[in-house]
Image 1 (cartoon, rainbow, N blue to C red):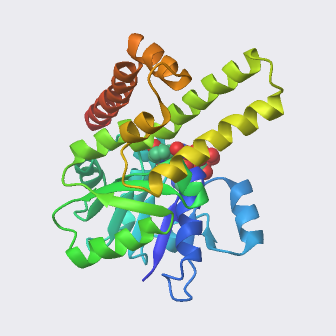
Image 2 (cartoon, rainbow, N blue to C red):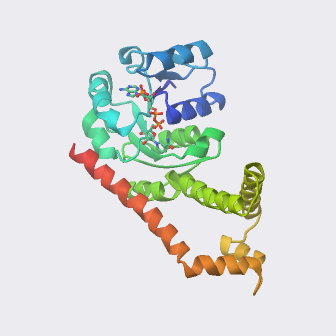
Length: 271
Ligand SMILES: NC(=O)c1ccc[n+]([C@@H]2O[C@H](COP(=O)([O-])OP(=O)(O)OC[C@H]3O[C@@H](n4cnc5c(N)ncnc54)[C@H](OP(=O)(O)O)[C@@H]3O)[C@@H](O)[C@H]2O)c1
């Protein structure tokens, strides 16, 4: 099976490296294509992939093509790709807000998988949601799942609406966690801790809480109840968050990302 990744940026390289390391390619080198001469030179020196600067040399023979350019580069790219592709090829889009129908229309193809990756894929802890056009077979979808899982884990969703929804939870989600971390860091600094100590306190608190959560069946609420005792310090913090409606505000933020993903999809469709 010949795999081509188009776009050697953050996401393209993350998936390319994940797939290449996973031994899923049975000694065949993954192909990667980018337009940036500097990136091409560096990748060629590293020798992990077959690196291409011309689409005609790599696209026509690829079986699966990962699309990992920014959405605003997709129009130009699709125009260049269209004459070089065939109906048997399968396209896996990592692009936010570009829906299956517009990829099918622009490329004149049927088999498209749309995904929503997230940044922890860089450290093998990503979660990718994905859905496919009906022309993608179950066997093909299983292969794609293996490739996506090489960067962490994945979930199959039935409709593209859930791709937009997962943008609001997992796609943009790492930034919500960083926002919470930043707020706690700033609180620690205000309390007089050094920058180093603040970082140790905050990062280990997050890591420890996640580990507790992952190693038990307790819900986050269950863990809050274990930590907080009536009239105690944790309860004072939780009461303050509840009084300020923090839970609702976080849900509003997730919906803002979801709504924006839907909006971007419509904008791309109309272009
Ligand atoms: N980063 C995230 O956390 C994240 C999360 C979810 C989804 N995504 C999606 O992942 C996709 C890629 O994002 P990214 O952050 O990896 O972008 P990126 O770092 O900018 O990478 C895109 C790469 O594609 C290259 N490129 C541009 N036009 C091209 C063309 N016509 N043909 C071949 N290569 C081309 C770019 O080169 P230049 O640098 O020269 O333009 C760059 O190397 C986006 O569509 C985004 O929506 C990203």
